[in-house]
Length: 96
Image 1 (tube, rainbow, N blue to C red):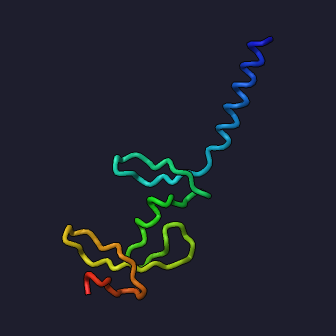
Image 2 (cartoon, helix red, strand yellow):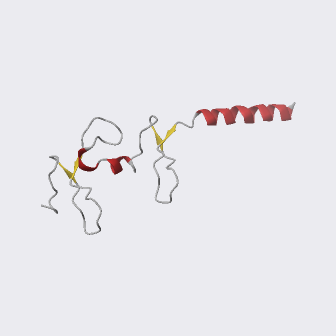
Image 3 (cartoon, rainbow, N blue to C red):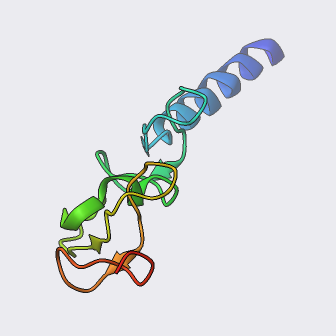
């Protein structure tokens, strides 16, 4: 009887944990694995990956409707500048 109670308790706890998985970020990390951070709903990105898709005035990655403009000029490394600007097409103070 004691072992049956233990098994039932284990199964019920396992099901409770499975039901709490929630939505995950899923963006690729630098190691090439999907990010496991929790987000409020499916399709959103965590705070680490939300800014990666906001270059040159696209909607924010979390779909909040707020438009974020970035400089986008080429840096010395050859990557686009990620500094925010107020006007679309404008350059930051480093790239004027």
